Length: 561
Image (cartoon, helix red, strand yellow):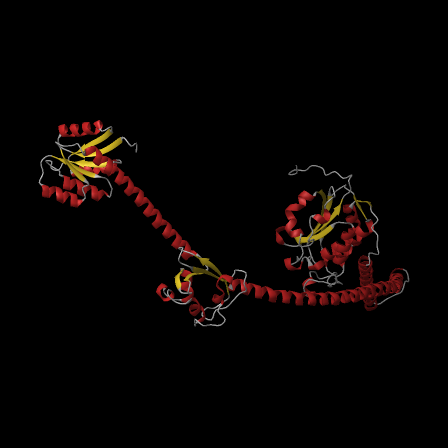
């Protein structure tokens, strides 16, 4: 407020008396802002609507009075000077008004003391406001300090010079499951140790008790703690100490657990080193045995191949050129021998192929090969089982040639076609198709392809294009959980009866080497092989993926941009 600007709420019924009062104030140098009220309700509304510096009231009015105005001011809760300016009034009424809280009173005919009285009351009102603000600030600060003091998670205790607890926070009360009055007045050593003469008490160290001291335990509390002490001087003649006791049980347990974990880790490392050494020795022995196995298989297969070739040649001579007359029983027996020897030669060839693949003993000689034409050539060698089983084999037209080893591609397609015939029921259908494709076309199948090649697509990155050959059949299909394992050596799906899909040839389970040979050959080409369900979930589709060289250009087709 401007010192010479005065906001007065005037309870007065006489307009002339109000004018005289305002003129007296203006003579005193004040610029007056005034509102005149004559009823209790008007005064309530005025007090609530804006700020005022003081209230001046006539003692008696037709519908209002100074005692009522004073009561209304008190009800509002405002601390404003209240001065009575009136005509004739009994002395006992004035005394009652002063006792009720009026600050001063004047007769309307004698206003000489009004200005000094207003200045005094304004000054005292300002001092009261300053004092109230200071008291509120002190109370608020005390409340905030007490809230912060009680919110500290550590145990905080204040003691006098004789180690008597004079204050503590809520954490201490919770730790000892006591009340505030139970804690105050007790010796701090007796509180924590159960006796004021405990010889192991850390509180005897007082100012030597620092936060970096070791962890301690107290008989009256569970867990581990770290204590520190600070001198306190609340007044010039008073002395005491502040103890801060931190619960470090969790940290202590973590340290113990860490120590145990470290010891366990050291033991595990030692065991791991021993296991690694054992594994190295086992791998060396396994490598030696594997090399010996491959050598044996190679030697045995090679040694078996020569007599088998002689036996087959002899049987063919007897069948076609010897002119021997044989009974039906003799002919059936000779045909059975020929079929068994032929099957045995196939197993020997598979063993030789696996041995060469595992020892990296074969080289891929690439030249341009039309895979679909190659499939037609293989089909001619399988006309007998196809006709016996009444299986339809259709091969798509495609003029595209790819860089590949023709001999190995022939072996791959033959193995896959023999499997397709073996596991397709009489009257079934086999379809072979091929097309150029890109890595982008394969990415939507990434999840299923990673089951066969964990590194996909990084294992085939860097090639401009690929040729994909699909061999689809309407056979008995392969369960999802078996599709990856069928490319392992000597692995077959189900029992022998599961493979009996026809009433004529190709009903045996086989050696379990054909698909592992296919995978080895495709790996040597830097390609891929996988299997999925056929159309409508029936049958199987074996897919071969051959990488193309930099001269390949994929022709545009519908759906590709």
